[in-house]
Image (cartoon, rainbow, N blue to C red):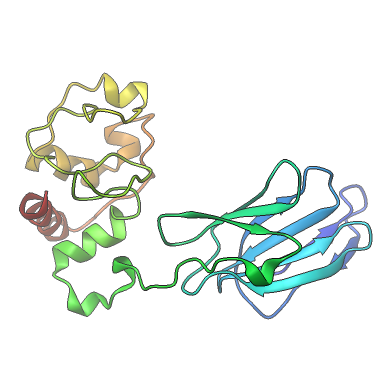
Length: 217
C-alpha cells in the first residue's frame, strides 16, 4: 500500500508509521550498526530514519527521473549507495545530502512515448532493454550484449558469467529459438537461467521483436 511502518514481530504492534504521500516504496536499507534506516520510493526520494526513536531525520530527492530501485549503506554507515533507471550507482553522504549528485537526470529510451516506436522496439524496450544492450560497446548491464546475436551459441559472450544451465544449453540463437524463448518463457525454455520470468503471448509481437533484433544487432 506504499506505507512505511515499523512492527513488533512478536506482538504485531505498530511501533511507528513513517508513511508519506509518495508511492510506492521500492527499497529499504539498514545501517551496519542498526542506528539508521533508509527508504527509497517511486518518485526518486530517499528518507532516512533514526531507529532509536523512529524519527524522520532527512527526506530528500536523489533522482531527477524515475524511482530509487536499490539502496545500501556503506560499511562505515556514513554513506548510502543507490541506483535508479540509469546505468550508474551513486553514493551520497548520509549527513551531507545537499551536496549529493542527482541521478537519472535525463529521460531514458525505455521511457519514451511508445507511440513513437515500432512494435518491435516497444517489445525490446519492455522485455529486454533493462538487462541487454544492442551493441558491443554498450554499457554493462545485468545480461550480456545482444550484438551479433543471430547465429551465436547460447552462453558464448566473452567476459559474461552465465548460469551453468545456459553455458551447457547447446543451442544457437536464431528466429526459432528466440521465438520459443518468449513463447514458453525463460523459466520453461531455459530452467535455472538468470533471465526473469516473462512471455510474449502474441505471435505477431514475438515476430516483430525478432525482426527488430535482426535489424539492430
